[in-house]
Image (cartoon, rainbow, N blue to C red; front, side, top):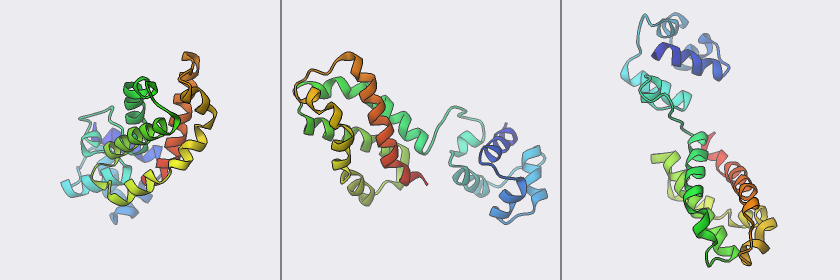
Length: 174
């Protein structure tokens, strides 16, 4: 299982065995043995491989085949949290409050995706993008303030939020 996942991740990243081996400072033949299943990397090297491919060691070992990390995990969390909270945010809410709620949902999703990498500077920087939220949500402002948003507009609102928050958060996953 490990050998197949390792090969798939390498191919998805568009790298050759030689390029990955060079990155880790090992001979291509050593790396090739990992992909063929003849040898396994040490625990420390396994962690470095997971970091390099932006997956968990559990995913790399085939223990959690559906896990997503990085920006994919952020989007997955944002969608999940959005679905849980969006209706509540319209109740007795004005546009500014709605933007703050979206920011909090996005920050919680970012915390979940970044884990220990999340720090005060990222929180402050991400929060300071509030004006961008007001810009990308401006088409929905009147409907939010008047609490007249139509059910048919909810998917468009969600799509707008997901796309723009992904753009705002993408720099933390490079």
